[in-house]
Image (cartoon, rainbow, N blue to C red):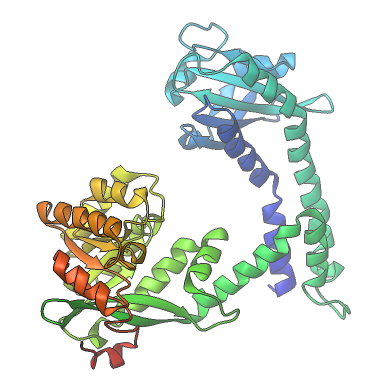
Length: 437
């Protein structure tokens, strides 16, 4: 497949009716505060069967479910062309009670989707609790019905037209004077101005993943009582254009759906340097919650000496599912890996991570360390963290130590481990062998 066809396919996929319907259910769940599930049900050609084609929330696992429109509230709403509300499926005779029990729906709002008097299906928002919806919810959803139907219908028509326009016979092949991106870019910039920018971003990220152009430097971590190198933090560097900070590369990857791939690729590359590092030095790698929950991380850790591996969970990353993360860390720790909470002290999220995940290591944020020798507030907060760490058998590492005065103050407080430009700048694994303070 040439690049023209590839671009065309990506663009068509982004405007596929199924993609649009998934956006509809996702946004409906956000819009209606009482909802914990949403689904688009399409009417089959038999004119009777409604099928769950796009689901989210508590209904996500019900994809493909089929129900009889003649014995359900959805069917009644579609036949009457009226948005209907059910407050309690256990007492409402209009609903298919068995299906409601199967999917856990107690209350719901069913919005008919009708295009030019042709019934297409239903948008349903649901709740696992009774009396979750109001007349205001019904009014809002009824008002959106025409827009939703038009959006889905337009997506189908746009996909058909662009499929023809962006085919090889219409600009992608032969001796066309236009480049393989000009026509797709023209179409994209009219229908979705952000598309071209996001596509280019995705190309750059995919190029990094395919080429493996992720290198690493390692910032040394020292035992402040003995001046011995005890660990390193792996810091990614990207050698491709555009030249931008690593955090921007990772943010770009997440914005185009490749964040987990980028994090795991970086982790794989970093851990390949274990044998190059001083034998007494651990290696800390930054990984987000979603990547930690990936099964690929277990495969990766199963092939190396995990006794020297520390996983750093950054304070700034929101955790959506603590129970799963706790279970995964229990499994990872069983392999010998240690858990560190990065950026402790820079926000409330870090303390939630600490309380719920019980890390082996807390890394004090540079914001807390800066001028600590002159600031009694920073001194008091750091003292409180140290007391907590001592009582929970947690190690503390101070990050961003840049002045002798900061180092002295931290030693006086009882901080045993530290890193920062005063102690040692990031270096390649080979150069790190000669590092000392």
